[in-house]
Image (cartoon, rainbow, N blue to C red):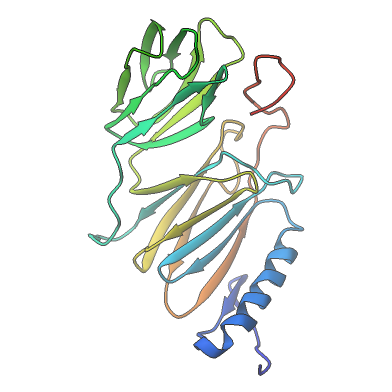
Length: 244
């Protein structure tokens, strides 16, 4: 493959348009760039036409799982995929699954109990205050989350249980995996506001919000610091020894 020069613009790395015959070479180049970016704490993202890959890390360059990433288009569009208004927050093994659940405003969240004993789920958060009193596997419970914000969840019987429902008006959102990664597909070209939320995010944290542009034919790699507390809010198993 012929030598490819990567140029910069306003501190960003710009990858020019490429043909099918050079895809393998660019994949190798992008992997090398991600290795370099990984040396700096913060958020890194590869912005591609119709796709966006995001990696979130903490100040010590460790991957940050369960971080919510939202995208809000700064333009009128009807081209975004529909967002489901149904979701689940499961109780199983005396923990909540998932630890962080992002949902669209107006979503109905079911709270199935898959344990052979009862749970008593509650939230005292301003975003949504509710209480699902003692219930077993045979009972169905659901809650409508109609206000944007964060609702912290607990169980009145099992103090180790902790989870969060992140309610957003953004049309595109998701959570990072164990490697701090998240991929969005089928995005229209244009300007977006990208926002990060995590239970341990500091107030007014650097890098929590930025503006990105998805254009063709260029791929842009972004890097922004993300500040989180050193002490992590985590959910422990019933034996108190394992984080979830």
